[in-house]
Image (cartoon, rainbow, N blue to C red; front, side, top):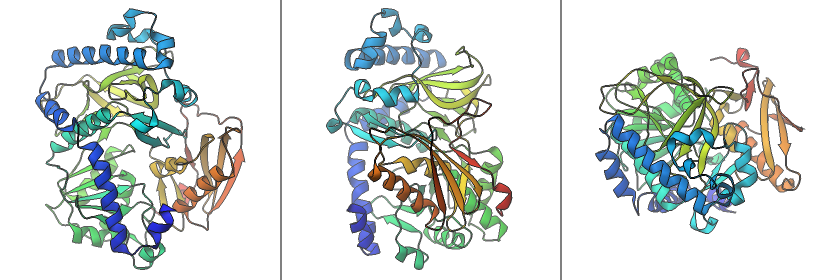
Length: 459
């Protein structure tokens, strides 16, 4: 009903609704303890590694105690040994998988839904999760994120172009070649990520030049398409306009980062977290990735769950009191670095984030649909345990589905199909295969998207 009302409204009132929605959301994000945490993180930004590790140990002990006392799941599994509260003994705790969380959410939660900030995640592993954050955790996470962005001059209210997985356009917008909506209060222009295709890209670039944002935020694959088109068609972007670009949800290769930077004439600064609440990895002014020890514990493990320099990432996040993440196998992998950095941030360095494969499906009608948008097809569905999309033809996508028969129904199936149609258009054939398992790759990783037609696409 909300979608129908929104789509029936004129453009101005749609913008007004988006502004009102953001105002309500920001009341939760920026009230309470937000200013306290923002001040604290700014104060702690030059702590020594010894001080950071001590702070990490203290926060770990407090977080584990909270989980034991408030989560039935963790009380039953880790309350019997007081040594579990010491960070040096973290390897004695069981590893928490996405499937563990999905099937035990009711006993993992520490707060009721009515008191929580709810995050519905699709996730690039194809598994749907609904996690609960306390309001304080949510405010702390935004304070940490804003503290990172403030290193490059960003503040809420500065002119920002945002590329994220919101289905905000109507057919009227497309006919008028208008691929954006505006938040009047916070000075944000939201650009559709469902219409990044060759025929429409000139209108994106023209409006970006007219809008002149100081910051770009969102899926890097979409920003990359705009940069490539602009460079290839001599549509120059003015220098000195954009101060920084903050990619989200996807990894970005050094080559593609350089391409984006060359077009928009500014730096691209990455940060890693997740919708379910992973601790932060942030990029500094020296282009170095730092583990943020104040936000959690990062373990890099091999196939035998032993510490290694390059391997799967297992995290314990201090900002997940509503749905505690303790030794959570997030499905990504990283490689640590032995280098040091002179930026003032003394947190350990990461050489490379290896997870979040930059993959996509392609629609002749709507263009490339990035991994973030594919994973979000699970939003507002029930009973879909896992899925994988394979594209062998330009006009057809095969979607393998593992379903929970008790929770999956026609309403959920329709929502899933509608979510896909929003992204790939009505001309794309969607073929569904219901299976009991979906095999992983030889590397041991699961691929949400298998694109076998890249050779047919004109890059």
